[in-house]
Image (cartoon, rainbow, N blue to C red):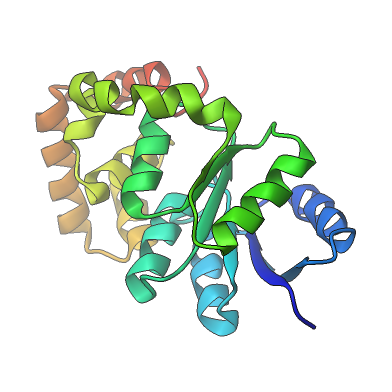
Length: 212
């Protein structure tokens, strides 16, 4: 069977089922495999080498952003399309910096997903209409957003920390030592000028990373 082979990564079965039905009615696209967390996404990618990986960012474990980074480290030619509830310049910028080719909102119409998969499969960038204002704000956001000072690893630690994850759990999820995780926590607090988790959480809310 020919066509665009897709790895679909989302932790909600109803979402995966919905897109399975969508692509079943699209002759040139088919779901090759799916994954429900970041670690599984990496494993599935290595196993099936899809043409396009459709990646949710808010998954358990390492999450979609770190999974995208790991996949791209493993295969720099990987073509990844993010579909996410996060409609803000921070996550868009982080995803594009990681090397993804596309980013669309989860509230996009079905035809947008189909168009985006086709575009990304051809090696071209696709940024959804809902994300266009944030794309234009990206450079300005990088200058004024304190989170832009964090390294990729520090940003992942930050996201886990404000999601009520302990340092020990962060170390386990990211496959680093607790000591290293602690160093990242200390470094990000210093860069942000915030020394407590409630303060970090308020910053995450202001940046649109988590809901109040």
